[in-house]
Length: 80
Image (cartoon, rainbow, N blue to C red):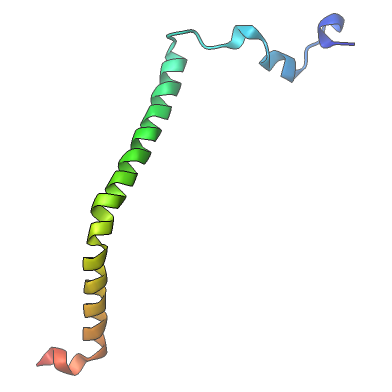
């Protein structure tokens, strides 16, 4: 027997009611779409930053690390 016939509604019936949709220009909809938009913009900016900034500096960082470890391994030549 369906829940609408016996008068009791369970949680899944309450979630499926058409009255619980977002209004066309409501604050909830604007907040939701704005949050999704900010996430997407942040992900795109992060990808652009990684490709054009971080990967360009990777060779310099590697060279600096290699030079620092070389100087640490040979302390006698570092003092001269």
